Image (tube, rainbow, N blue to C red; front, side):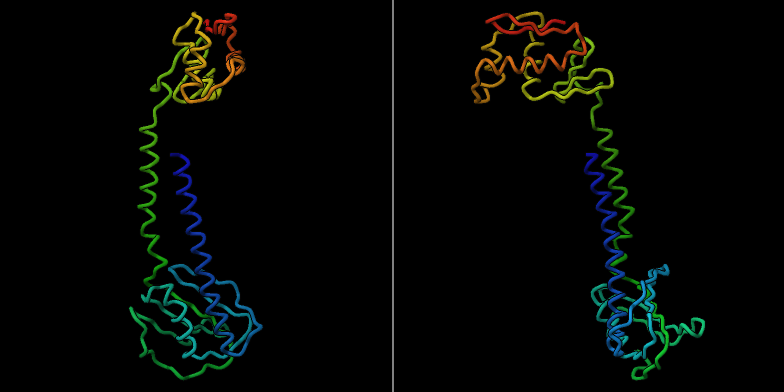
Length: 267
């Protein structure tokens, strides 16, 4: 559950990070196409600035002549997908005249062909173009963000509430160990010792008859043969040896061998 929560959080971070890069790319493309239409194929579009309130500023390395007809067409073509045909506002400022507004228009709900001042070309100059997205596709995830946080918190709280603690799990006190069969682990203080599937089965079978010898044939059948796996008797000896090593922290626990008969556990 913890890994799922981390994955959701990571996905949210990646989503918004990728979305931010996508936004920047759209506005850079608008700037590049404007330069090409003005006959400039070498100048650079400067890094896009986010001015807040969903406003992005496109700045240019060199002066160029601004044709409002071209500006309207290019911006609308790029934002038609980005803003889903909703509202946006475009403002053109002069760099050399202390941010003087040169030209501007607003699109509401659908493309407005009645925008004024078409046909007039502004002379070659330094321009900054600001585009404010008033109602856009890019904003809808922000409205969902609090809900996503709530969902993630709910998953975390539920997993914490429902996840059984060690004291709630069935465990067997084995000397200085706590044997938790469901987790296939031995607890020794703060140390957790992992057991294999077969080591867990062997320990359970031996603990079912403490201080008694459990026959080899019975152990072979319960650990392997019932699963359709047939092994030689030596496999049991190897498995016992591995389990002994994992129990060696408590010298009072002994797995004893009755030659030719089987194994037993003493503690």
